[in-house]
Image (cartoon, rainbow, N blue to C red; front, side):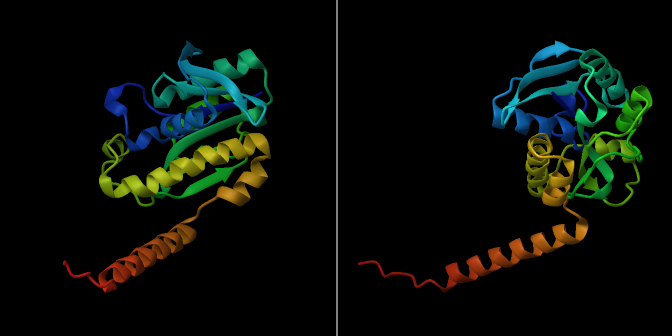
Length: 217
């Protein structure tokens, strides 16, 4: 069984905030595969289901971000799954907004939730999917990460969340290497895709302006 955890803070106060990218990506994954994440267990909301026939447990820790490891540790201790069957999705201030980074393991970087998970598990060899919410240091980091997603941020972040959910499913169906090749979105690629979309919108607008206006009879 694969355990897929999306990190975030519980409660309406934190809905649609930058720090809740993990929760939102997990919700998209749950919707796609018809999994209800509504059972309170292991200090988390959980839901069991299948992705392409493979059993998964979706987990949304309710301990608040900095103590996410308490929930994940309880889940891993109960199910005794190998560490590589744990997938964690979370936000990352250190990579550009809308970018996606998938890794098979490694350090937590500056993310306190991941630091707590690695500390309590005692190992870091599990896949993680990072959704970029920054790219440069903010003057007030706490206020920024728990701030609401703005209208300007909504489109690139929504696209990244959908790809994060797809990447989690890809790890389950194939493996983390396949997901890395398919879904890793770096800043350069993100900038290119954004430029292509803007160019397409501009061409469509020009075509609309060029269309002759029919005379009314």
